[in-house]
Image (cartoon, rainbow, N blue to C red; front, side, top):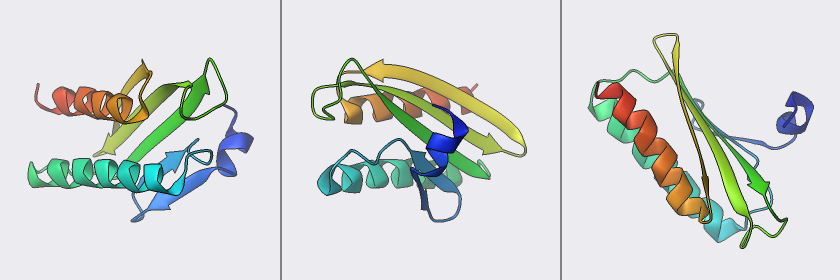
Length: 110
């Protein structure tokens, strides 16, 4: 996605969490997405990981319907000026978000 497209589709949560590419998802889906990302941020904070920013970008691949399209997800957590990134492609948005956040979390446990 180019940056001009992302600027129109950015949802900021709490100042340090940014979601982009989620505008086609319905309200109930977004409630779950926000809860998942918020819980992840809280978990990192509890483990003394100082978070400057969490960014998650979703891009639908192989279809336009959000319920049937695969989701390509990119996550980036910036902590102490250092970015930690992960990505995945999933048939299920929620499983994909869980997977990409677990990949990020595992990098902090090293």
